Length: 401
Image (cartoon, one colour):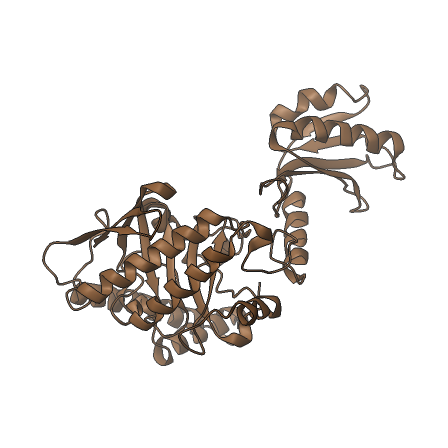
C-alpha cells in the first residue's frame, strides 16, 4: 500500500487584512497529496505562523476526515523540529520543494481578482479606500490629475526618460519617476523606490513567464482611463462630489501594487504622495518641457514646496542622477540590433521541417513581427527595462483587476 503524503508550509497570503490597519498575513496550509484535498488551513501574523502551521497539522490529524499521513513534506528545514514535536515516530518528515502551495495561492489570487471588490482587500472599490483617504485628499487628487493631464508630460517624455524624485516627508529619496503614455496607450506615471527597483521591474517585464508571478519591484502610480473602465461605485462618488476630469480618457485613479501582483490597500499618504508628485511634475514640464531631451547637456533640477496649509518639499531631477538618458541615435542603434537578433530568432523558429513544426513557437514569432511592424511602442527609446501599460505593472484599471 502506498504511503500517504501530506504537503504543508506557510506563504505570504495573496491579500491584505485591512482592520485595524492594512497588513498581509501568512497563509498556512496542509494538502493531502493523494486526493489533492486541503486538510487544514489558516491565516496568521508572520511572527506566529510557524506555531499556527503546527497546530493546524495537529488538528487535521486528530479531527480530519482523510487518512492520516505516513509522510510529511515541507520546503523549509526550520519547520521540521516544531512539526516533529506533534508527530509520532511512525510519520517521517522530508525536506523538498512544495510547488503545490504556489498553485493554491495562484488560485486564491485569481478568485479574489474576479470578485467585485478592490483586489486583495475585499473592500468595495472606492476613492476613499475604506475610509482611510479623506474626501479633501481625493478632491486634491482630481484637481492635480486634471492639471497634469492638460500639461501632458507624455508628449515630452518617454517612459525610459526617468526623473529623480525626492519627497523626504513620504520616505522617497532617490526614487524613480517614469512617465507613461508616449505610445498612446495608457497615460500617467509610475514611482519606483530606487533605480535598482526600476531595473528589476524591467528585467521581470522582459520575461513573460516570470512576469506572471513577479513584477520585480513594487510600484505606486497614477493612471488615467476612460469612464467605461472605472467601477460604478467610484463613478457615483465622482458624480456626488462634483470632481472634474480633464477629458473622456482622463479619469484618474491611484494604484499601489506589491512585487507579486497583490494590490496594496491605499492609505492617505499614498494618495498625498501621488498628489504632490503630479503637482510638481506639471510645474516641471510646463517650465522645462522644451529642454527635456536625451541630447540636452547636463541635468535640470527643481525644488518645490507643495501644498497650501502644510508644505511638502519635493525635488525633481532630470535625468535621474543614477540613470543617464542616452542620445536618441544610440537608442535607435540598440533597438535595430535587438530587432535583427529577434528576426534571426524568428527565422530559426519558422524555418523548420513540417515534421518538427512548433505551432506555439511560430505563433509567438509571428506576433512579435506583427507588433513591431504595426504598433508604435515606447521600447523605441527604452534604454532600461521599463513599465509598459499602467502604473500597476499589469495594465489594469480598477474595473479590470
